[in-house]
Image 1 (tube, rainbow, N blue to C red):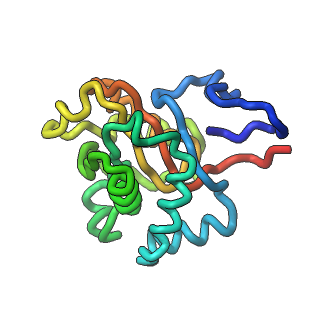
Image 2 (image 1 turned 90 degrees about the vertical axis):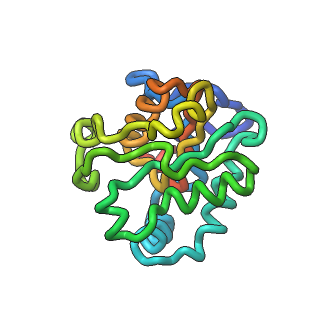
Image 3 (image 1 turned 180 degrees about the horizontal axis):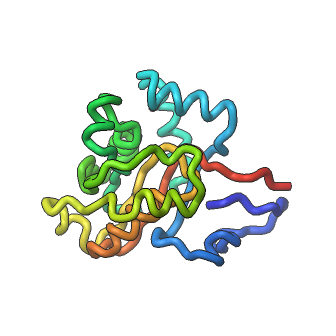
Length: 196
């Protein structure tokens, strides 16, 4: 899902970016409709920390536009989970709010607690890629109640922002270890260097 520095009529569907070629992720695809910048950051922070839930319709509508024919390949939508202490502090999981809206509009199963955050982790902000990976290692597990739903399923993993991919990659690793056939990541925004 990383933007290529190529324009015109060239189709790059199915091609890997340099990051994936050098370090193949556990997930199958990653898509986001907007780049993380000043405008999208304000929307995300207001939604995440400012109780501005009214933006969900816009966020979900944009995310549906980049979701490649969800009715044909997705079985389950699942959010990246928050640890219970962070959920108590924030009162809602923004990824779950987005995931619920997407699953309903696509008429798919939504598992808000299909993944569990079993270890509290410090915030990822200002951490390097390697430290982010170490931070989330073994932080997630599949909810045993949903093992049969996940086995052989195509999962769409929903989050708000894709920064380095460490969190969604660890979630995808856990889901595939539990038997998921495919894990596609869908976020609202993607941190990307400027492309020319």
